[in-house]
Length: 358
Image 1 (cartoon, rainbow, N blue to C red):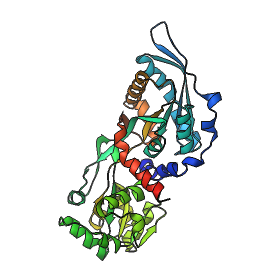
Image 2 (cartoon, rainbow, N blue to C red):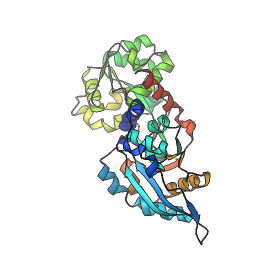
Image 3 (spheres, rainbow, N blue to C red):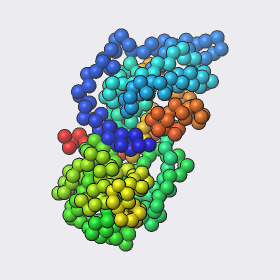
Image 4 (cartoon, rainbow, N blue to C red):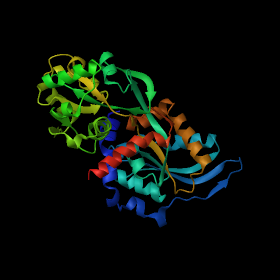
C-alpha cells in the first residue's frame, strides 16, 4: 500500500513530534463523552453494549473515509453478535489529526482506532495493539542485499505479510556501480564509502525514506543519515529516482517495491539507460517496517480480554469477505492478523531516533 509506504512512511513521526502539542477536543471531552460502559446480558445470553466508538486517522479526506466505511457498522455488529456481543450503536469518526486519535484513545473517548504503528508506539501507555494489517508480499524478503540483486526483478506475490522493508539503492553512476559490485561480490561496505556518495533522502518523518535507513546505518556503521556529508531532501520518491537516473545522486533510500512503481518512468520520463532493475541495485536492507494497526483503548472499560478477542475475530472475519475487503481497501489493507506488541520494537527505536534528533 502506497499509503503505508509513504504514509507509514511519513506520518508516523509527526505523531511523535507533535505529542505535546495536541490538546485537542477529541481527547479532552473526557467527562462528557467517555464511552458508555454499562453492559447487560440479553435474553439470548449475549452481552449488550450501548455503543462502540471507532476512529480512523485522517490519511485521506474525512468524508471519503466516512462514506467508504459506513458498511463497517453493520458488519461489525453482525460479527460481534455471532460471538456473544450485541452492540446497539457503532459510531465511526475520523480524527482531526493522528495525534487527536491517539489522545482520544488514551483518554478512553475512542474504543477502537485504525492507526499506524508510529501512533500506536507513541501512545502505547494508553493504547493496546490487537491486529496488524496485511499487504501483498514480494518475491524476495531477505536482509541480504545481494539476494535482492540476484533474484531481480522482484514481483508482487499473493502471500500476505504484515510488514514491508526499506531499501538502500545505488544508481548507475560510477560510484553507485562500484558499491553495488562490492555488495554483489559479498564484500562489506564502509562508512567512508557511503559518505562519499551523493544521496537523495526523504524528510525526517519518513519511515522508509529516512528513519529505518538511519537505523540500518546506525547498526552497521554507528552513523545515521544526519551524518552524511552530501544528502539532499527530495520532495517525492519520483524526484529521488529522477535524480538517480541523471547521475545527480549516487544513492537513495525508499520502500522495497518502489522500483516496480517507477519501472516505466525510469527509461521514459527519468531518462534511465537500461531496465530499472539493471541500473538500480540494492546495497542495504532495513529491518521490517510493520503495517498499520487496529488498536484499542486501555482506558475503555469495554476492553475486557474477552471482548478484545471478539473484536480480533470480528475484524479478521470481515477482512475475509468481499464486502469487507472493499471497505478496508480505503486504507489499502488486505486483511488482518493478530498482533504482537514486540513486533513494533523497531518502530519504537525509529521514533526514539526521531525524538533524539529534535
